[in-house]
Length: 245
Ligand SMILES: Nc1ncnc2c1ncn2[C@@H]1O[C@H](COP(=O)(O)OP(=O)(O)OP(=O)(O)O)[C@@H](O)[C@H]1O
Ligand SMILES: [Mg+2]
Image 1 (cartoon, rainbow, N blue to C red):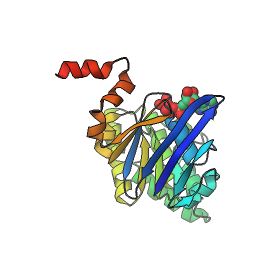
Image 2 (cartoon, rainbow, N blue to C red):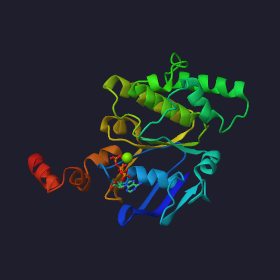
Image 3 (cartoon, rainbow, N blue to C red):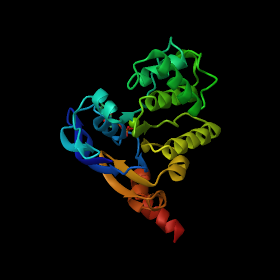
Image 4 (cartoon, protein in one colour):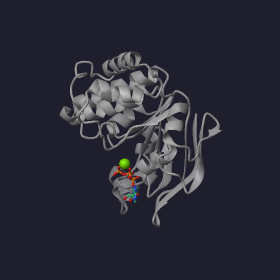
């Protein structure tokens, strides 16, 4: 469904994404992990049309969409969430989600009822009339997910939707994401919460200094010395290996 080939993106000399390739097949949940500053958000932004890549190709359902505008990519069925959530502060949760719904639906009443259905799906059914500004961190993360879902994606890119949530809230959002996949939406997610990656992802890609350094099942990735090294550095893999020996 999604094919990213040899994508690079630099910011004034700094190679934020360096020759990265990845795939998401229909129905999969794929995780993208890596240390802070690895280039994960930049890669998402380049895939979804927010940055024009310096090199490389993004194909969606076999169609080259490299460099297309975000609204066109959204219309084709791919949408991303933002790591830094920015809900419209002065309007309600319902109206915020309707902004997403208008990507597919022109009619106001229909958009409102779609927004309400999606709010219930992400556990915000009781917060429809709350203002964006009055939401907790968890509420803002749910709203960001709802706004993206309301655009009717077939491929959903989630950028750290669990950051700042407590363990109960994480369990709830993991269940929401499982239900979204069960409805037929393919998911690519950036996540630092490893417990969530392990319980959700079919496959994991590890990005380090802009490069994909590993790909595999969550169990294989957790046991990969190259990955341990990238996170902990300075011979950590060898030291850990020594401890286990
Ligand atoms: N718009 C930009 N202009 C200049 N440099 C940028 C820009 N966006 C990102 N960078 C730099 O590119 C590198 C990758 O950043 P990015 O936000 O993609 O990392 P990340 O893996 O998402 O990190 P985190 O886990 O902290 O969210 C960093 O060094 C960052 O400072
Ligand atoms: Mg990021």
